[in-house]
Structure formats: structure tokens, C-alpha cells
Image 1: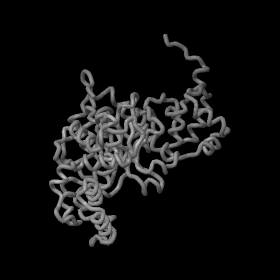
Image 2: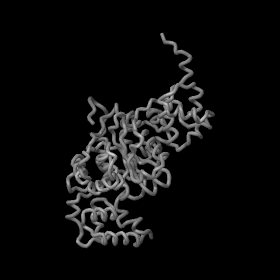
Image 3: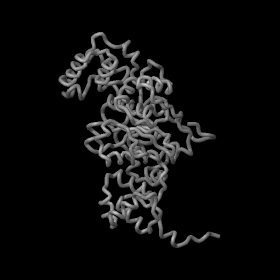
Length: 403
């Protein structure tokens, strides 16, 4: 015999303030605009958004959902992904408007919800990001992190993003909005998950493989060194970490050209995947360049032009065509194995706490697997990477999950 459901329960919905905030902030909407469209006062809406949860009449919940262009199911889904406000790390954070930081936090929560939904079905990659003690220098931290990832002390890293993904770091290409993002940074990092134990790097899509690699290595430095620490010059430390992680100082000193010029630095750029500007800084920090030589090389980058594009070398360095821009695939691999090859954007959104399909689409468009491309019906061809597929380290769950 089916148990009767009380009528009052059918007419009420519990909505969660965190879901309201995410729905609003990921679209960069103002609370006053949402309240006006929903036909409620701004003070009432603010109270509901800042509450853990609120029991509302179903009609009122529908008004809020319509104003936010999200479903009631999303607003009623209990939040499971913890992303601490103030936890994002990236360059120029002091100048970042709170609304834009909150928008990135909402994107991070979408990634976390996807991972959380998939985890029970999978055995995920073992996490290799070490917890670096506060007394360790950035150089020592980078060396320890290379060892943790199983990278030899003088071995180049051909594909940095794939290396991080095989070490349990989620990388998402995310559309950073606003002029500040384009001017001042290309990536951010934070920890997601119920226990804040899953590292995430969000990277802005650019056409510069040099900037992408340095940004991702920079964020790895934050994840390893600044999990809880916030004092000190964090950005300087992260840049020093990134340079050492990509090109250890022992190798730098051994391979450094006797007469450093833009062209004599090009072989190091090609082998170790660092921009000439980053190599100049790395050499200067390690006392391989004088202050005068450093300034002179920067002047050459600023004044010389790429013959094929006419752009200054500061914008298009020599060697800018030597590599493809690195793109992630772990999130798509996890989603495909957890939800099946037949999944659609719509069904994926439904299974990931009812996130809106167009936002799920944007997330999947930044991934470079065949499944993700088919799913989003991308028309532009994307090169298929020939490295070991992440399916080797993301397996359907059998027995106890390790990592």
C-alpha cells in the first residue's frame, strides 16, 4: 500500500542559500535585479540567499527559479561542494572585484559537483600534490613536487596539464569575464570537495602555449605551498616555484648560453616549454644575468617584431608556433566513464545537481576528448593528443577506491 504524501509537503520547497548565490553569481546578476524580477523585496531575497536553507511555498520557489533562469530542482539540491570564499589564489587578487571572484567560485562549485557526482562510480587518479611545509623555499618545494609526480630532476615536462591531471589535479578551461582577468591573470586555483581535498586549476583559454604553461605551473605552486598559508609574498613564491618546476636551476646553469640573446635562449624555450621572458627572469634570479643584460633583453622583446605577424616580440615571442596550447581532458574522462557514452549535455546537467545545460556545455567545451567534442557538437577540429589516455588512471569503481 502506497503511503499518502501530506498536501502541505507537496506545496512547499526547501531552497538553499548557497544554490541561490551560485545561480546568481555565475551569471553576474545583482541581488536587487533578481528580487525585482521575482516580485519580492530585496531585503527578503537577501535574507533567503544568506540563510542555509528556507522552506518556501512552491509558487515562491518557482518565482525565484524563473528570475534566476535555473530550475527549482537546482535551488532545492543540497550543496555538497565546499569552496571557501577567499580561498582562490591568483595574480592581482587584491585588485579583483568581489563579484568576479564569486563568479569563479561558482564555476569551481560546478566542477566540484560534477566530480562529487562521479566519485562513487570511479577509481580516480592518486593525488600527487604534496603538502609543502612553511619553512621550505619555493625551489625546494618545486623539487619536492617534481619528485612526488615522479618527474626526474632534469627531465623536461612535454605536457604540463596532462602531467597534473594524471596526478589528480582537475583542470578546467573557464571563460573569465571582465577586462581585469584579461589584463592581469590567466588562471586561478583552489581546493574543492566535501573535505576540500580535490585540487582545481581554472585556466582561461588563450592562444599562447607559453602563458598557459606558466600559469598552470604557477597555480600548482599555490596548491602545493599555500594550502592554508596566506602570509608572505605568495605570488613571488609561486612564480619562483613555476620556473623551477619547469626548468630546475641545476639544468638552467648547465644549459645556459655563454652569450644570452633572444635567439640563444630559444633552444631552452623549445625543450623546457618556458617563454623567453620567463627564462630571462629565471636566469636573473639565479644570477646568470646582470641587471643590465636583463633590461637589454626586455627592450629587445619590446622593440623587435615578429616578421610573420608584425606584432612585437613581447606579444608574439620567437617560437610561439612550436607547440599547441595545452588543454585538459580529465573532467571529460571522469564524466564519460561515470555517466556513460550515451549521456547528453541535458542528462549530464540533471545528474550533476540540476546545473543548467548551457553552463555544463561551456565546461565540456574546454575539454579535449572525442566524447566531449561529440557531446557539445563543436565544429572546430581539435587535435587529438597521442599521450597515454587518462582512462588508464580513471577506472570504473571496483572494490575500494584508492586516491
